[in-house]
Image 1: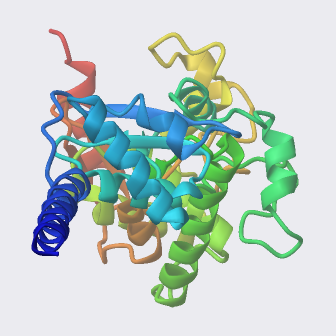
Image 2: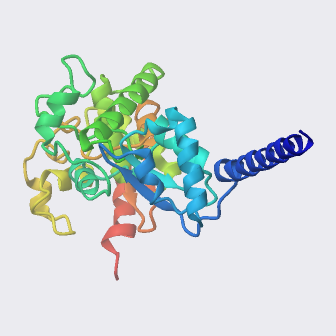
Image 3: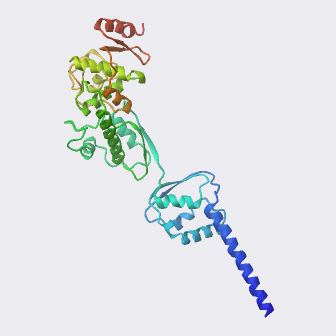
Amino acid sequence: MNILKKLMIGMLIVSIMLIVSLMVVYQQVVSTDFKVVNHQDFVIEKGQTSFGLLSDIPFFDSQKNRYIARLWLKLNEEKTKIKVGHFELAERETLSTFFKKLVSGQQKQFSVSLIEGQSFDQWLKLLINSKHLIIDITDETILYEKFVSTNDFCRNDYQKLEGCLLADTYLYTSQDTLSSTLKRTYTQMSNALNRLWGARYQDIAIRSPYDALILASIIEKETAVATERGLISGVFNNRLHKNMRLQTDPTVIYGVRDEYEGDITRKHLRTPTPYNTYVIKGLPITPIAMVGLASLEAATKPELTDYLYFVAKGNGTHHFSETLAEHNKAVGLYQLNKGK
């Protein structure tokens, strides 16, 4: 009886030691910061399982650890319900935190910077060439019909999205489409424009949110130095109030896009297009570029000034004038003598 009792005690001790050892190894597998040499991306496709994924994860230096990980998954069945998508295994990631990402769908995010002053076509090309973005719709007219409802701020007869999408840096995942990404830029612009138009100066010359987009796009193209945005807007506001032509070169360039080769000619200035503000009075028919918040705010809150003219000085800034005589003198100084 004593021998049997000792044997049972011995077996109990061995069992306890084994259980403790397994618990220690198990705890190491699920909670230790395993040293991953380089971070790694995983694309989880439909039908792929958590157990199948274990062989690809660079956590385990032995078959024993991989076996314990399989046991951990069996004991944590909720961790097997992984989502489809593109996920990132970061350096010093733990097994538990990594599978938490897979189950919650916390996918790796990519970024794309959509720059103010560029055109819709330039944005479209950038998005088409962006990695991991699903390219679905690339036709501007179809995108317009998808985004713009009857009374939307961007409603126009030309079905153009130019100027209606807010410039910013946007995040996306491998499950996002080109159209869904652009839809977010449209929504962001709608929110920003609604806020800024509601806070606009009441005596400005523009009469609608869409006019604000058009003017903001011109300000965007004319401004190289941020501190001049409000002043340039003030000049345009004054000219519109006085029924003067805006006479701004970027509108000419936009109207003759295919013909423009870097220098504006007399022919360009005289070419009648619905964008040429040397020919038409008022604003062009649509925005001429994508805009950011700063130019949109300048359009709705122009700086109070008596200036009616400005000319580029060649260093990114402008010389502003109240009279035509002063302006012509500045043109002679900064433009006609350029290169002499």
